[in-house]
Length: 460
Image (cartoon, rainbow, N blue to C red; front, side):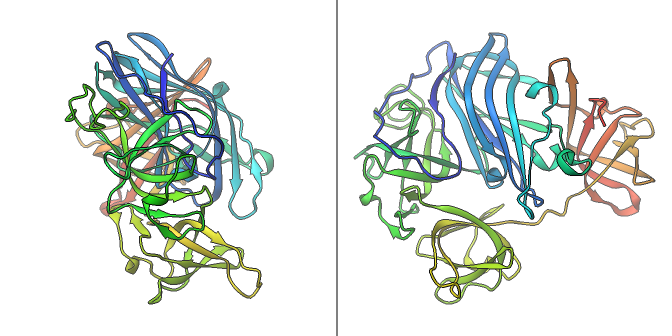
């Protein structure tokens, strides 16, 4: 059984309660390494929530099976469009691994326009096997991050009406970051367990209900800190027991402090990974609101946000409000009329029906509309490896498809007790296979594919 170092919920209200004790997790020894399991997703417009109940995660390889997570954890995939969510960081036996097995017990879909909920049937008893091509290794004393992308856009299909409207067939990609770091920001919730003097502004963040699930958080001059009312403050007000939300980036460095592990914690708490905070929200009172910019920010940083149902809110940008797009930090000039954004901050409710509710913004994400197209059908000729092309019968037409060299090819199959999702190669494509192709229509009539999902389950 893996020893848990860190287990947080990515989004929602912060917890409360007594301060957990500061616990020093085990340091990877000569026969162990560390693995971090992260979940992420891409945005979906037609649904407001996609809630998965994850109950188990298992590594399978030369060392046999190692359970790295067991319990019950609800994940809203739509909360992960801009973040990744750590499931667990912990110590495992060093060795080669070929498979990650997830177990899901329930899925709940909430329609954006109506609020109607659906519970699609889980294929193969909710077991999903993720195979990385060639497997991956966990080396002694080193850390490997594994990012699991559960692509909701490509996993959820509209197949009918009423209670059976949706079909869930998981399309999952595995990205092994051996020595690397994820591109998305991390969003963690917990309570402050200990405040460190060296360096000033650093502290230990622990899960509210699991005292041994902790990570060190570092602050800098670039860290924006907001109090329980959503107003700017300083790190000096932070106290033990405070519930906080931290948004930032993971750090993994070589040992430069002489304490024998691979971080620079100077003997505080031995961890391979720490978090460099960009935003800290104290009090667990922040909310997330998605909408469309009605007018650009005025000179005081205020603008209106259409949030659906004919309702608008007022957004107040503040000293320290961070604005991000898919390529990094932005300035308020990016908040143009008609732009879809996600605002995180504390909502101040108005008692006057003629006055909008106000959200004190700590963080704004600018959504970029995807111009990705898709087509689905059967492969109608033998795929040509020289031109990396084939033809697909889609929408009563026979369409040429050209597959880019860097394109992902995902093979989704099913055995007697589980769904299998693995990355394939062009040579795995065959005449008669059912495929969904993602990309853009190209010049000359050929569809330019950046991803091909091959459905080998044999189900409608």
